[in-house]
Picture (cartoon, protein in one colour):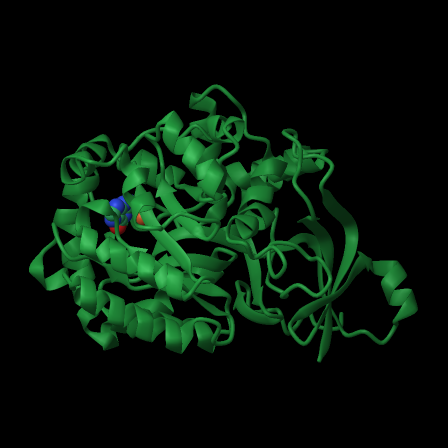
Length: 439
Ligand code: GUN
Ligand code: FE
């Protein structure tokens, strides 16, 4: 099965410099050729079509095709927690989040929300995410069933949580180990699904449970580890009181063998120089969640500092502490956080982060994040004329940088005309993907 898509094309194939330059390919009139769900060819449309005039073409001329967006930290059971008023992290968890996560004890509810969640990701052009479930193994089962059904590359894990949370949401060190192990055996590398060992954060796990998380990472060396770190100052103080022997917050995780290149730590707003050094030494990464950090009043993560310290980082929504599924909207807020930290994030760099950069932080750059030949064909079709204001801005923009910047500042789900996963259309905003065929 072969299918070509005609549009402007943009992807990064290596790391850009600070101005976002020297690392991308942009084709004004490009052709992306997909065979059996993989990228087969990429090039100038008229050249490729002259050589292969019989290629079936779906024509998205006037739009921009980019690799599917990647979200490195999001909670699928927190869809309905978005926009919960008035609290910072610890009260927000107790008053809004935990009562909502309780509902996922019901597998029917979990299945319904998993479908809603995936559709929402696709409507926003996101094709891969690193996802928290709840403490219930059934929530992760529901998520992987839905995601595998769409053939999407997703990473998910069951929350491990055995203290400082309501009884109805607590497992035990042993049951969390057994449940996680069963999910790994069933789902890790089933189709495109991957597993992440998921202790919620240091506050809600006993040392025994963190040791079990470490044991899982040792027994299954290519699973991921996802958790939260240093998001909120009260949280950091609470962790210090629970683990008085630890050098700092990261050291708690370090003692249990949870650091490494597949370990993703959400937030990291209040990290110390020693923690930065340990991130760098172990190849662990920070997930930057600007809408969440602003919404929960957590603080302004300084990504320029992380770059200086050579700490790997990615960008994420953190729904439902985060306020939008849209990675475009998330990059908009990231820009503003950077402004408050005294520097202007380049739009090309932003797009790099949400595609190849995030793929690299997940060690998946040989599969997703760019249109390198043989990669999995996940992509989004961006519409630069989707609102009157965006149409006006586009007509006044001349450079690629200017156009992308207004897409990032003004764009959201309305700008996603279509989303494709492994070459299949999973979101078709106007319902005309079929009509555009072979035009
Ligand atoms: N820290 C521990 N759990 C959570 C969560 O669900 N969301 C956020 N933003 N931070 C957390
Ligand atoms: Fe989170």
